[in-house]
Image (cartoon, rainbow, N blue to C red; front, top):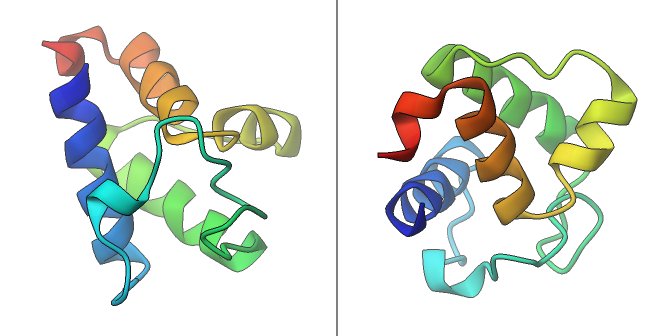
Length: 88
């Protein structure tokens, strides 16, 4: 799971063009949207599109989005729950 979380951090940084952020700057339990990273609802939409495109996993309502984007760890757990083969 740690490898997947690391991969996910890199994808988030690349997708959102976060030039001053390194993967190690994102804590596993740090809030993604509305947290210290400064991500907003537009960033969330970009992440939803990236997750659907890269992993084939949908985040199709606000309630699910709030839960899934509560942290990088929660996001990774949701994706691997939907696509267990990614966890290995």
